[in-house]
Image 1: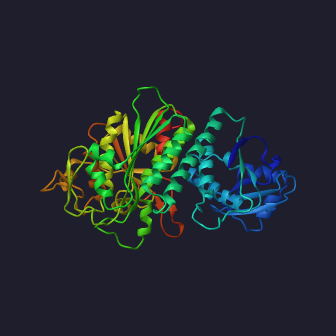
Image 2: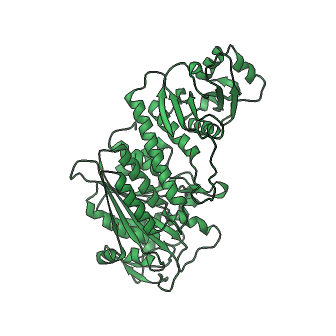
Image 3: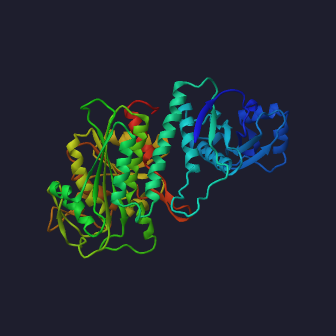
Length: 499
């Protein structure tokens, strides 16, 4: 998809389709009012027939309006004018993209970008216009025998601006496109089934990403190398699988030599059956999404490399499967992590923290400025926050604030939960340094307490994306979150975006 910026009178745009917004009760936006003047009241006349009210997400295609240069005019409902905000703008933009892609226009000009939500400036309007459009146009049909694609898909979208496009406006398009590409990569990896997306496949994708990005170096550790490093926790999980584990390390060097990197650690369980503590069969197919944390690291690294951000960044993805086998972990087993700490495995389905703890220890060798791990870690987080916000736990106030601000800025929000020492006692074990679960209460918090025991040497934050990483039900599919949040946070560190 190609995006560009245009200026001028909406009614004078020569295009296959002009997109304008209408508020509830047929209140015309400024662009729609200009179209109506050019059409000598024809638009108000058509709206007066009552078929289109301007409700949020409503659409109507008009043809051959007199005095208007566009072949078609697509009306998009904006909802109540007094409550019109950035989420409402995103919804309207997505609705327009869906109609355009299903119809015959292969290019269009959108005047929705001229709207002025109270909570956003031009940068966010343009960037989020790209993100919302790409979100609606995304398809995953790699595994279908016949691709279900439109005969004449939308290929070019021009966004109108009120004046001459500034460098900042052009930058907004670049940022939006890179974020959207990163989200799409994360979705593609996550939507693949476990028989295709194996740890070895993820390693191959990392190498491919390294070949495309000049400033990226990729290293993949095999099980023998991990064994030499003492990664007994990670390797205990892969013992039950025929697929050998991989530790994928992607180093992006866009900053000054020697400057401390931000390290992203993403859980890469390419399929999680629960091991000996077998999961219920209902919805177990969704456990291919247990690698969404790792997928988000891929997507964020790809976005940052595309934008050539001036910072150093490391992505670490411990990749494994968790399956039942004669050599799989058993409840009561005790393993030794890379840090030397011992862990009693009370539930083999709490395996994500076992592969993450060794990866977090490994992250310390990069002398990081900050470490953020991303994982579909606990069902408790879904109970607590649903599908709207990712859980955030941390050991550094400033880092937490950065992530929360980035989430608000992109609509990819997180909610901070406490990480008090009071919860640590739930992990006590009579036989090892700690247990891998902390009982029924506060499951998301005790999982983070477990990880915190491996992150004492640096600033660290944990994002539990169990509720936000994929959609359930009829719309089942990966969301690509939290790629927008992470990319925005890194842009903020580079001072390349509005806060």
